[in-house]
Structures are given as structure tokens and as C-alpha cells.
Length: 192
Image (cartoon, rainbow, N blue to C red; front, side, top):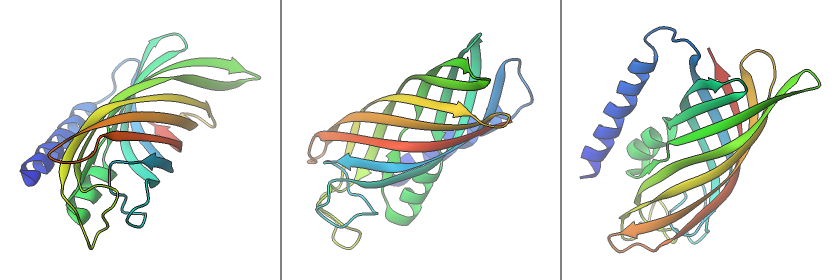
């Protein structure tokens, strides 16, 4: 079951990457987002923390696309790449958290600043936070929405620094606990 889900995610990621790389489209651009931060998580095992610790570090490399909806408003989609692959191959776990954002941009002092909400979902498979890579407990699926708020600024051309706060209630299936994820992450985006 786990291998089928991982295979489906890989096909999905590759299909989107090919679809978004088929030449320029008016008001549409693609790039990547590198993010890292910390989170409180009372559901999932964290491979960067010891057993029993609720949370730990978070990092990902994402494929990102954005579309100019109207002047000073941009919709974007961030598709995780690093965590689904790394967790699936190295840890036999799944953490897949794609997200849509809607940014409002403003020029202040000759610099572009933005802020806006994000919404996505979190799909996970693995043991709970009391486990570690050596002693894994019962493995289960969890799913929930992700709500976030972004703020950031452009530096250079099509380079962005951002900060996001996020919250995700997680609902588990197959014997795992329900709970939540709450965190903050810094990001660097580059569009082409």
C-alpha cells in the first residue's frame, strides 16, 4: 500500500513538473522554494528529534509556480519534492503537504513587499511522535488542512525571502492519535 502511494506521488510530481515546464505563458512563471523552520507536532514522528519529542525541525525543497491574477495580486502553488522523496526512500514514511497561496504585493520605498494567506493539505503515513527510527510504533495515516500566513520581500529580480506561520489539525486513521501541527518557517524563492 505504501509503495503504491509513493509511486502515485512520484508520477504526480513528474507530471506537474513536465506540464509547468512547457515554455512561457503570459503572467505565469515557475521556480523553486527552499524553506526551513521549526514546528510543534503531537502526532507524527520527527526524524530530526528523539522519541517522545513533540515536533522538531522542518525543511523542504518545493517546485513553485505563480500566476499574476491582477495588478499586485499573485496566486501561487507550492509542490513539495524533497520531503516526499526523502521520507519515502530513507524512512518508509510519507509527508506530503502541497499548498496554494494568495499574495498581496505593495511597493514601499522602492521595494516589493507581500503578505497573504495560504491553504493546503497534509497527508502523512508513519508512526507517532513516541517512536524513533529504531523503535517504530504502530504506523497510520493522518490527514488535515493546512492554514498559513505569509509575509516577505523581493530582493534582486524574482528572488523572494519570506516568513510563514502555519497551523494544521491532523486526523488519524488506523490507530494513531489526532492532534495538531503549529510552526514557523523561513523561505527563499527563485522564479524564472
